[in-house]
Amino acid sequence: MNHQIFVTLLHDTIALTTILNPFAAASIMISMLSPAVPATILPTAKKATLTVLIASLITLFAGEVIFHFFGINIASIKVIGGVILMLIAINMAYGQGAKNRHTPEEQAEAQEKEDISIVPLGIPILFGPGVIATIVVLSHNDSVAYGKPISYALVTTAIVLASVTTYIVLRYAGLLQKALGVTGMKILTRIMGLIVGAIAAQFLVGGVKALWRILNG
Image 1 (spheres, rainbow, N blue to C red):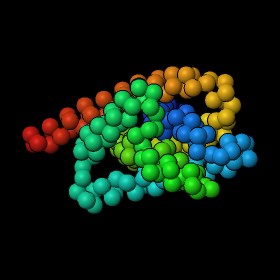
Image 2: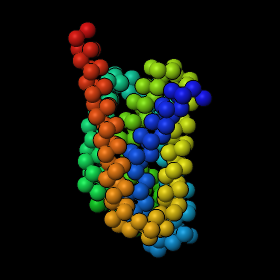
Image 3: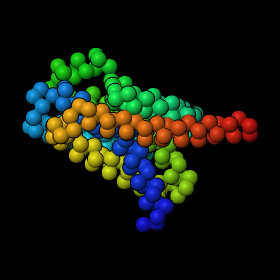
Image 4: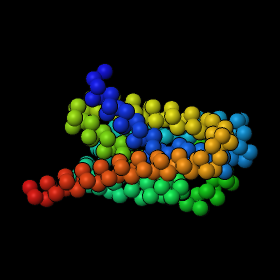
């Protein structure tokens, strides 16, 4: 594999994994499941991960087409995606994790249901607006550098790797929480928040530059 392509794949995988923020989602899953035991965690982790995988692949292959249909250019997506990611990063930096991705009403409704894996765990706690914007922007950036076929292959692989990582974290959420404790989970969330913030800054700067070029002909 070409070194530059490998670096791009690594960047895309890290970007998607940090924005999905499975550690924060794992904490929320444990708080929602009653009881939070392997028998309930395993099927929930599987369904939530499958939801993320399917939603991500649909976004990859149809997202940019839909945005073009509504006349939204990629530069605008980069800017608003950067803003969304920056807000997520700020919440993560304060240790709030996925708090901004779901409402108290959604959490209350989820606790009344037997299955929380698809809603709200899969969507919107794991797969939210930030992930949508990230997938579309990464796909566009990769296609500019390598062309559409390689771009789809790279982002698809990144999505699969990020989904596998998410499944592992959710699957062993109970053990992770016992091993790391609340403080450890929050430290990881803060570190991931810094990475998301850096990605958000790249999106914002790239989007503003592109819009400036468009406006100035």
